[in-house]
Length: 359
Image 1 (cartoon, rainbow, N blue to C red):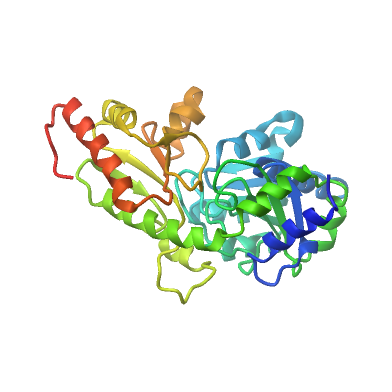
Image 2 (tube, helix red, strand yellow):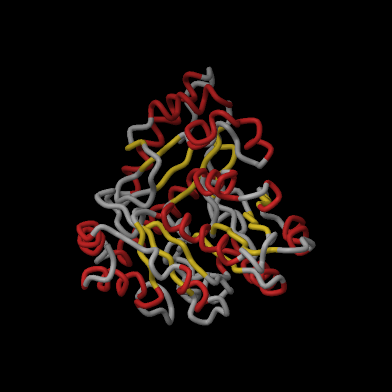
């Protein structure tokens, strides 16, 4: 369903979170991956004849389903129609610019689960030179960052995450940049494509009324937790925009003059001690466990094992540690959240023969 007054109200809510965007530039879908798939099909359609042979580029290591969608032979076309650059670094950006024919570039900002931020302005410039469309999934940076001004032609977002906060409804959006040279073609391609169940619109609207305030609070909590992880002796690595690619992330902040941290709820952690430490820590962790993010309650998941169990060596070559634990920090009192972490750290230290470690 689409086009009802409740759909319009939801589009207006989404549009209000982006600069200079009206409801007419928002399209709604049943979930974030539906929006990504719609964008992928649209990109394929735009590079059909007379753009046959133009490649779809995926830049940076993304969420599992995005990669799987684009690799499916029945959807991607010929094997060389899809090119994946998993590290998302400067050398790989140079390699994209050397490609002979590009139809579309997809990236996440920041990426999930490694929280890398790419040079969006440079990527947009490459897209322009190749007459390609740039599609950015901003779900992890939702509303903390604005990627339209950096040159994104289309922004894909899961509305099931921070927008909704409670896992009570699913939804996704595509926001079309009205300043893009692709805007008219995108609207034409997607004119009859969007749909979202009306009852889900009602729930999404109800749960998103306070999204700005929730985002402010979760940003504060997550920044504190990430800093505590970073200084903890049992932690080997913390993936969080506060610590990695920070300048590239901050260059796209919604409110760059605000001195409060706005790095979002998501972070990933690798513990010292390998699989045994990670398993004991995770099992002792008394928080909700599951693969979503942006919820009011703290979530954790052994991301690599859950998402990539049958390709662990391959994803390791892309920089993804098999023992990585991903967290989405919620709205609980920050010391309550850290208390759960402290108990888990103690269990991991004891099980690995290290005894008690200061927390």
